[in-house]
Length: 274
Image (cartoon, rainbow, N blue to C red):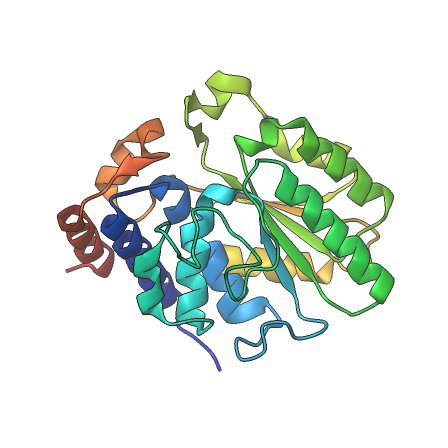
């Protein structure tokens, strides 16, 4: 089945706004910035089956950037892993959808993440296991640009290159903002592409990581690099809060912010172009 990825992105963004608006607060900016990536992976590129979420040899996605959990949930719900009504339980008592992804609670989640840097190491381990099993899977993982200030990211990057994990494709959500300011002000990670190349990775730099066609082309290109003996990092230059202007305008303040249901409804109308 083929999907209209631009419409899928709208659906995911609307569900992000709905569930965070219902809760009243959330990591909204970094959820909206990764929507195009999630749409491409789950609706176009990944070998998965929502009816059989533990399918042997399936591709796996590890969201090391744990703040983006609600975006992953919205994507999984739209892909059919669970009822979209469950999104309204986000981060509430007894929920299967905690703030950060939990593989023991949420159908479709492949790895529990949250503490920044640790999910990326787990993804590297999953990729190594997949290589040893020779199951043919591709392991995808998402990290943040603020998260990239963690030393654990670079330890894992070294290990992945040393083990020639060309079944591993990473993505950096390079939106240039983190909770305390701009990434450049806090602890600059530039030149990012050069760093990943120096650590032995293939690098693809996407000029507009919120353009679904550019993201799709980059993922396809990354998949062709299997056999190169190197893991691949796709750098997505994104806008934090993309799709809702008042959230973009908050700047670093959109990392975690209050959103009421009226604001959510207005945001959904903006996303839909109404």
